[in-house]
Image (tube, rainbow, N blue to C red; front, side, top):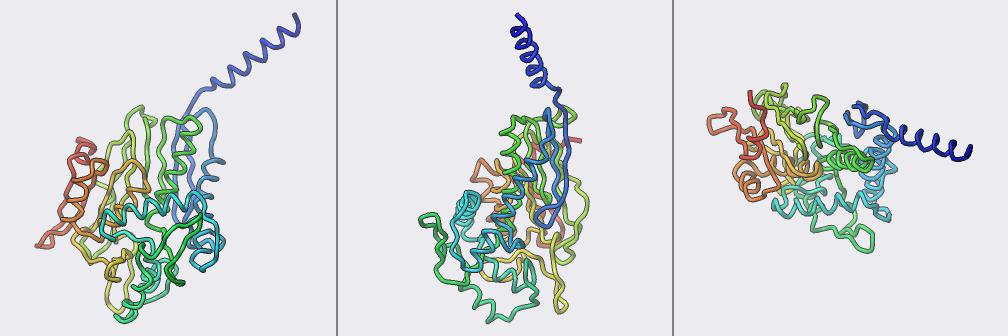
Length: 332
């Protein structure tokens, strides 16, 4: 009888522990050279798992971590690929193909030559750009037996336009694996949400807008607010990262097709997709493609929605919204 009472008490305690009240937690910090923040509902603090998920992405795809898999591949070292790299490579190739090469993770030599990423360059001469283009193009890469095969040595990868999205997705995947139904994950402005916020309503996500045109390249607070219950939102804009060289201002988005900084009509591209990795890659590609081709891709793909802020022929700022994106906007 005593043993039965002890077992009953233990069972009740276990049930009570499993039914602890769920509440919203908030964690934030720095990762990938930027900031991150996570809000989620759970019965316990999941900070350790969140940080571990971000650390795995850093150790696989960071250009600034000398020990990362990406850094080793960029040094032409032989290294077995991990699942994170393989997923990024697959997504990068899909977006590359669907955008006619406007998204390309082999753009690293050009990014560095123009003074971004790990580079300290200025304005490269036309002959240098032409030379570097011979190292750019995803058709020069393949995966074989768990290894990355390059057409020639010296091809280097820059996953900066997709790795933040992967980091968001990895944290989201961890949270869902822990039974979390309501969360918002943000890394460097790229966001993925699920379920409800603390208000027991949809999540409100700001859409950042540039304050001027291609030449001003400055940002301002969001005026557009998307209301989301599920999915991811990523924004690309040259106002976020630019350089002044020899009296010329140019943004960090480099066109992998011609080797030069992008000077298109789109000054900000915000993309909604089911995963942040996909949204992140398309947002960069649309900056390269310009308004008309980007609209065509979005309108043909039911999984994509977009908000493009662009300059019309008179140099005036305009906004184009896909039908689905318009429906997500907070109604005043």
